[in-house]
Amino acid sequence: SALQAGLDASSGDCVVLLDADFQHPLDVIPQMVERWRAGVDMVYTTKAHRAEEPWLRQLGSRLFYRLVSTRRGALPPDAGDFRLLDRRVVDALCALPERNRFMKGLYAWVGFRSEGIAIEMHERPEGTSHFSGMKLASLALTGITAFSIKPLRLVTLTGIAISAGSLLMAAWIVFEKLFFGQDIPGFTTLAAAVFLLSGVQLVSL
Image 1: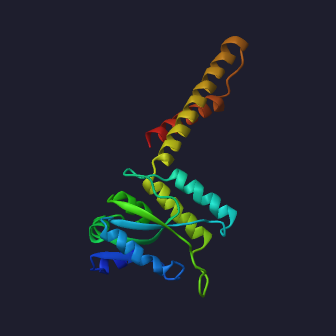
Image 2: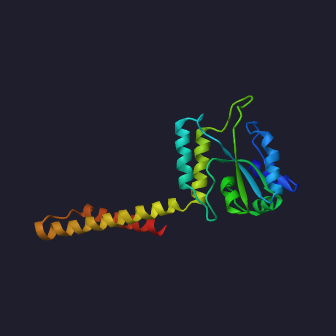
Image 3: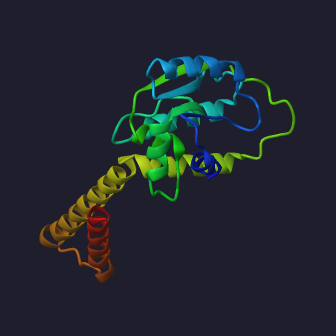
């Protein structure tokens, strides 16, 4: 929301976004402007390495970029919000009506010619980050559900598997009755019907 508020208030031919903790190397901005003047509409930065981060966060990051995708292209791995945007890109972002604004996905969604620059992050000069692991996980979940069809496919496959299992269960019940004379308890057929309908509902959703 803060990023979008800044974009809404901006008026220049190009806009540079950066975090308030000053971990981004500001001496990269002239290079970003140079690439913009050469015709690049969006110059984004990526972390040169993540060796200093906890292994769990590195694993989560790799999993996130593997899962998330957009209809107009993949998200560049390890790309952050420190980037330069041409006015046309800013106007396109401001025109999007999304309420849950996952900015990394929106940058890719609007298209335009983009180019990355690898940077070394600085140490935070003071204070500590208030962006907890839970908030990071929530942001990742927003990105995955907003810009990836994989969760929908997973739910569909789950529904198909449940429905197929219920049909096998029903076939086994009939087989036992016909060939072994096994009495069929009422709850058994009810369970098979419930599983079948649950699977159909998941596929339909």
